[in-house]
Image 1 (cartoon, rainbow, N blue to C red):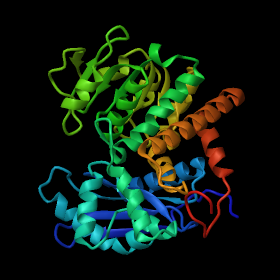
Image 2: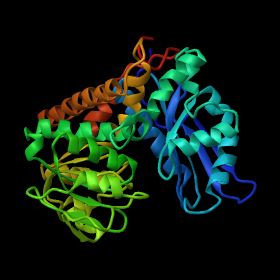
Image 3: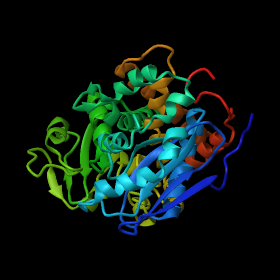
Length: 390
């Protein structure tokens, strides 16, 4: 048994595209277990250092969730709006195909989605972007296919696959409200972003009765109030490409930055890294922040938030719904239902949030420091199945 968190990635694969010359990277943070997992992103200006940091965060998500897998991340430095995106992804995924078959359970990330990644893998003769799970879990192909098919099952306005990460983010918010002793039906929440992660969180928070009073996308914000919360079903139905519709009848439109000025109980950054800088941390009028986006709060700002009495659920917890959903999907001995997978995400995430924030308050330490300590205390078991009984 091993108990540690590596300070450096165990494997970095750098790719140079032979057609357009862009760079890409696959970073496997640790090779302790038989499986590693993490998303693939398309981002202009992406760097190897960024991919390394994201892979390290994925490892922390695995550790704090008690999953016997390691973190990984991949991506290309490429304009996601370029007409050559699909072929650029095809060439990159072709280059890292051996890792996808053997160890790397790929997922969608910024500017990618599961259907487009699976379509590219199908062109390469790969049954699923998560095919490495089959051998790691010692499944037959039929058993794996039955499980992975659940990700395409409808849930609300989307599918289990599209909503699973958002379910974890919503659960982290609800766990924070529990910790603050605030009933969901009287609580107020704002969300930065309206892509897959944010819309998933909005859906589940609305289902729980939470008042979502502000949302911002990259172009604008839409602000309501506790008395007149935003019409989430309308916004989900009419949003496109991560953007809010422009014809909402409830709420007032403004600049994207206006979201930082809305007084609420929980603010959810669910879009970009470094969304909360020192200036914002010193002024944002909230009781807590649940970081759906990776690295959403700069390190220096975390102490400022702590000093102001604002509780921060770090990204390794609020953003681990995707990882925990895989446990909910693959750990049961029998085939689960989508609702059972989501309930697993809900229950486990809320428990981790309560444990972290309670210990942070008791010891007067940053929640991230508590979470990192919990990760470092995790016992690792090489050469075992990642999910369920070893």
